[in-house]
Image (cartoon, rainbow, N blue to C red; front, top):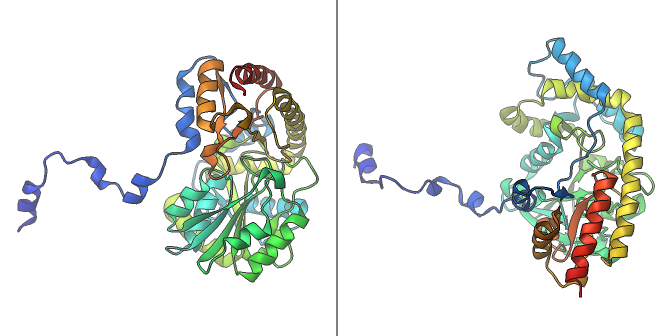
Length: 402
C-alpha cells in the first residue's frame, strides 16, 4: 500500500490527543498552578501561594541591566555563561559555604535553578534509575525525574522530626536501582533545614551506596537558625554532588531566570551538551545583572532576610493562636501548618478558604506524601496583607473547626 493510499484511509479528523506521548498525557499538571488558575478570576484575593519575593529587584541590579542594554549586550553568551559571572559565583560559593570550584570548568549558568535540576537529572539517569526524594517536596522534582526516564521514590519526612531527612528512612528505601538523592534544604514547602550534624550521616549513606546527590540550595541565604551548610562542603561529598543555586529567592530576581550548577567537570560537561541544544544560554542582560548582585547586593539580601524573619515569627504565632498546629520553619519563606483540627482535607480547605474568605494558599497535597492535611502559606507578602490574611483564616477556622 502506498503512503498516499494509507493517508486517504486514515480518519479525516482524528483526535490530536493521539499524537501526545503517553508519559506526558499521564503527567499531572502542577498542583500549584492548577489551583491558582482559580485565583486569577477572583477579585480581592490575598495570595499566600506563589513562592515569589514581594520585594522588587534592588535598583542597582536593575540599573546594571539597563547599562548592559545601552552598551549593546543583546547577544548570545558562551553556553557555559559569562566567565565574569562564573568567577563571581565561584568566589561566592567559596566565601559563603566553603566549597571551591574551578569557575571555568565546574560551573554552568542556567535559565534559573529549575533548568539546572532538569539538566542534572537528564545527564545522569538511565531508564529505570531511582531518584530518592524526601517528601513533602517541591512540585517539579518527581515530574522532572519521570521526564528524564527515572523513577521517583519518595522518602517521608515528619513534623515530629522537624521535617528533616532521617538516615533510617532513607536507607530503608535504597535499592540496587537507586542512583540519585535529590535534596532541598532549606525546604520548600516545609521550611525545614538540615544542619551539618544532620547531613553527615546522610553523606555516609551516599558514599556507602554510591549515590549522586543533587542538592537544591536555592534558599540557602534564607536560613534563620544558624548558617546554611552546603552538602558539597561535607568530607568527600563534592565529587558526588551537583550543587544547584540561583538568584530568584535571595536577590528577588525570579523573573530574570538565572541560576547555576556547580559540579565535577565530567558531569558539568554532559549537562552542557543538553543545555547547548535546548536553552543555549541564559539571557546576557540577566547575567550582567547577576554579576552586580553578587558584587554589591549583600546588604539588600540581609535586609530582606531580616524582614522575612519578622514575618515568619508573626505568621507562626498567629496560626498557633488560631488553633492550627504549626511547625516553626527555620528557612525559606513558607509555613506548612496542619489543618487536622478542622477535619477538612487540604484541597477542600483551600478551595473553601478562597471562596469564603478570599485567601489563596496551596493545598499540601501539591507537594506529595505527607501533605494531605496541611497547607503551604508563603510569608513573602507585606506584613499588612499577612495580618489581614490571618484574620480571615481565623474567621474561617472558627466556622469550620471541630
